[in-house]
Amino acid sequence: MLNLYKPRRQVIAEAVSVLSSYGVSQEVRDRLTVIFDEQSDRELYRANPRLLAAHLQLQERTMLKILVMGLREGLVTLNWEVECPACGGIDPAHHHLHELRSLHTCPACKTIHETNADEQVRVTFTLDERLRKLTAAADDPAFRSKMDRRYGVVSAHHMLTLPTFRQLFPRETLPPNESLLIRRVAILFTDLAGSTQLYSRRGDTKAYELVHRHFDLLFRIVDEQGGVVIKTIGDAIMAAFTEPDQAVRAAIAIHDQLKHLNQDLGLPPDDWLRLKIGLDVGPCVSVTLNDRPDYFGTTVNTAARVQSASYPDRITMTEALLPAAAIVDDLKGWQRQQRALVLKGIDHPVTVYDLAPPST
Image (cartoon, rainbow, N blue to C red; front, side, top):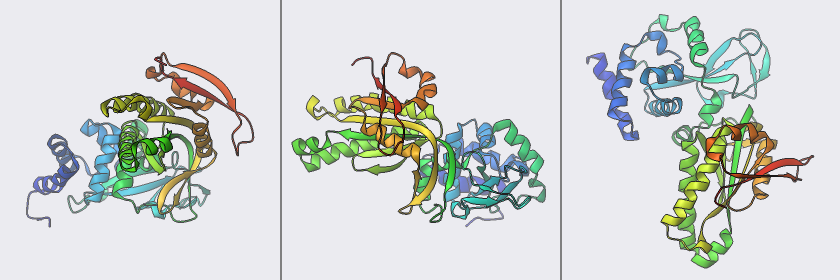
């Protein structure tokens, strides 16, 4: 229990110290304590995570992870704010994901609009009053608008693709039959080629250990590249990214690091873990399925079918990923072959590109 007779800085420092259990360094905890103690009230009320990241000299995703940890420990509260596309007004009334709906009614102008997770819904955080009582002056819409223009906002989609949020708040989901529109998401599917033969040759226990090691690798790389694993399907994964170049970089990293994992495991070539990887980018909807956040739509279906049509040790992506691939330096030297696919459930042929590393 917090002791209100202690100096405020000490109260905040003791509360922030709990973040050590999540691996947050002493240096970052000390800087966070100073921010919570010294920054103006208006910077700590419905705070833009990018503003806090600038204060702490941290990357946006790192700051967002720390704020989610702080949310779990009661250091901050979370706001899901919805911006009206008609009048520009901000509705801050939502503190939980399950309070959002597919259609949102603006409380100011009464416009009804689709709830867009990457353009109209953003997240902000407020310092909990147990640590510091913010004054009425903290609520300064003009200041928040100025900071949003300067730093940009953190969309709800960024929160939905944050593994830390999904791990610490597994029950934070949309209500049944509700969805959030996402204008652009990059979807990555992988599948382990020859897994049936692997189980036959290595035995169930050993093969499962290898598959588990490969899952650990995939989860880590997807997180490092700014995405999240939405689900596993047998020996496959489905991952989502807010930016298409993140998905391309993740696919390259998976290819490169899986080769090193095979070597480190000392596997004979016949037992090497080999992946088929498929990518697409476009719109989808975020929903709740089996009590877990999930994505649905043509983009998801296309990525899954592109992966099915891919080859072991290859990355196959739709034409929509070409602009993203063009800015990824790690793709230089990779061989690229174009082909047209007729995919089940897709009305027209889809142009895809098979990417092979320089050494093959």
